[in-house]
Amino acid sequence: MEVEELAERLSAIAEELADLAFDRLREASASASHEGGPDPALAAEERRITRARRSVEKAATLLRAPEVKDS
Image (cartoon, rainbow, N blue to C red; front, top):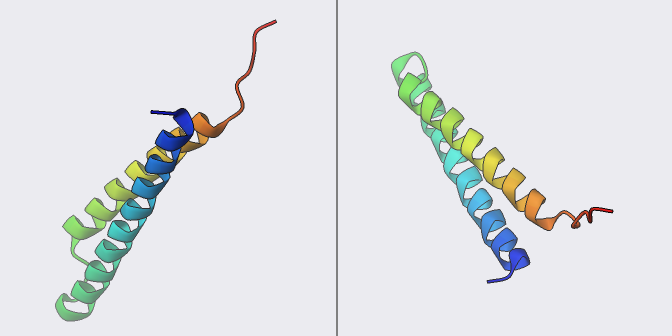
């Protein structure tokens, strides 16, 4: 497997994580209107998913960075 291929897979995973985080935000928002406040568990899960997405995006970026050669 090539590095660029792996970077593309990581980017796709980051997109999936972003969608999942958005779903959790939507659920927390819906629970806030019905229950008087957002569900703390959903909010915490959204933050955890967002942190994971950022880490995966960083990994993809690092893999795409040009190789630095030692002199």
